[in-house]
Length: 191
Image 1 (cartoon, one colour):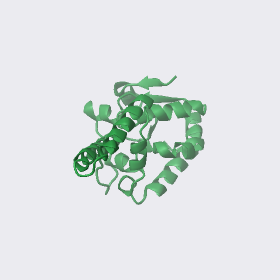
Image 2 (cartoon, helix red, strand yellow; image 1 turned 90 degrees about the horizontal axis):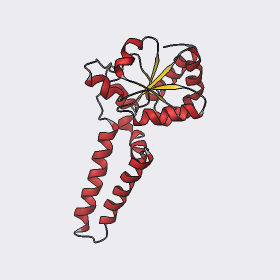
Image 3 (cartoon, rainbow, N blue to C red; image 1 turned 180 degrees about the vertical axis):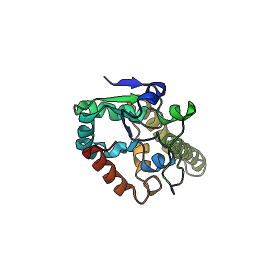
Image 4 (cartoon, rainbow, N blue to C red; image 1 turned 180 degrees about the horizontal axis):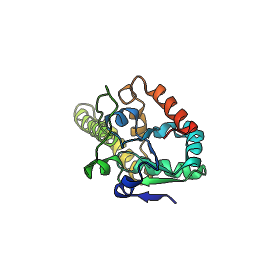
């Protein structure tokens, strides 16, 4: 079972915990909890050895924008024998409580993944309905998007978010090197 950690509980322990942010590099660059390491959820399997080494030196606290991806990460880590605390409410709760977010210098602020998903899903539904007026049957695209959103809610996964996270917009040019540096720091004892 994953242990939740509120941002009020995280604040005094921030210097003791190893904070892992599982959002896309673009989201992370736009604002993250001070001292957090960016390990995107889709790179978690690759990062497992480094995360296991880091967990051997101290407790991990996993965060994302609001908590869904972090919960997924905590469950995957637990299945691999790595315990981690779940930052309840994620960076959104951190910022909502008036705490500062660090930003990666020179990087543009990106929309949160859930906002990107809402934009794409809403656009696909609207286009499906409008185009159906000229080409009957296209409304089924809208139905498929609705079914995908329903499945996403029930399974607490988001295929569209995973796909959007792979777009160049969400992967700044140096994100591969940044991940390598993060994994090295986690493996070698950097906090």
